[in-house]
Image 1 (cartoon, rainbow, N blue to C red):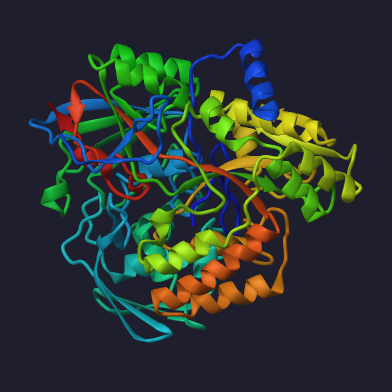
Image 2 (spheres, rainbow, N blue to C red):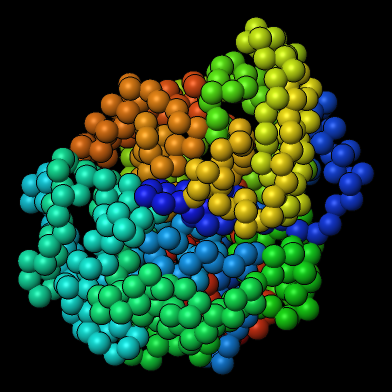
Length: 570
């Protein structure tokens, strides 16, 4: 599962960064008066392309999804890539957010690859066998070198995977290993993972951070300094770590001894520039100072689309859903009627137009349909059709708040000035809460501090509500619902439902995707009925490529695929 922001023994999420923060950036300045007017309106009233299903004012497609971009025709010396925030760490055990994985995916590799169409293919493992429900045997690719020139073996795989079950490490991805009993070398290039109970979700997670392989010697030598700005990492990807200037940039250089000739980097270097100010980022795109970037601010998309002389804007597959997270179910939001009321008080269609400029789609689900691709369509359709719907109805919302005896109830709503869209969303939610009789206290934090909400329970102590863009890092919807089980690290509100837990835990043991999908759908309905999180809308992966570069695929798979290796010159 991939959320937004970072935590200790499991995963985190937020709209900021640190763990699994799946965030979407939105730029350009909006005046206070403009935002207030928007919020009032919300409350009171060359490559293959595919229609995205969202229409503009004229009834045409607002945007299309691209499978790829034009192939490069030459190698280049360097390109500059914009980042809305600095990575929390380059240690794969703590890479739970967009910035971390955007960089790390080009340096460190996993046992399997996550392709742009969200399918899976061999990576550092050439194959896997599942001889019985409790055993997974991985054949490790031979002839792969780490960036220091040493050869990867099964010992490195065992050392790398074992960190996720080491309490001293406190991996943010520990929950993916919850059923793992042992990780053993069973041959020079063979690793066997044994589980305590059948777990048919574990293997699918190995396309991401949970499957990354690092040199065992490097891990031992670096110790607790592994992955920071001074030590970097020593993995197997097409680029290797060169320099990290804190607060400024991270530079990677091409690894010429890379094992896969088809993904040999076409650029000698890539420099990731930290540009937290959205307006500065967009200006840099248009002037050519920055060659590209992901998570384009939605209020700049129409501007960039029109500026064809500067470059091209692409849209692709995504697995992210923008949601409200109720982090305290013991206060104002203890009664499900209050949670439901807040959902009903938000005009989500208007919110999408104002905050995302139409580059999003309303949803009642915590997952996108794209992560159900391995499940029969009839099963996924049934799962989505059965979810609670909360249509915009302020009067009904007021009645629910009154019935719950919550009129005038206070709650702390944590937010940050991440971008214009995030700001508009926060204001819309606060305004909707006031409209139905609740009393929100807005607690505005720095981007970095906001990120810690997803990794540090102490930071959330006095917070009742926050917003996150939560992405999944595999085509397994259970990845989402597993975090809502009793006691899970990312179950931020401490919700507990034995029936839900039983459905999810049983689904883990189902080898058949359809059977697993049916149980997941039932669990999804329970979570929706109780409004554990409040889904607002699903977004789209956005990518800008300046006029001098091309080659990367516009897909959420950039989090776990060496996308930068494909970028070259036009």
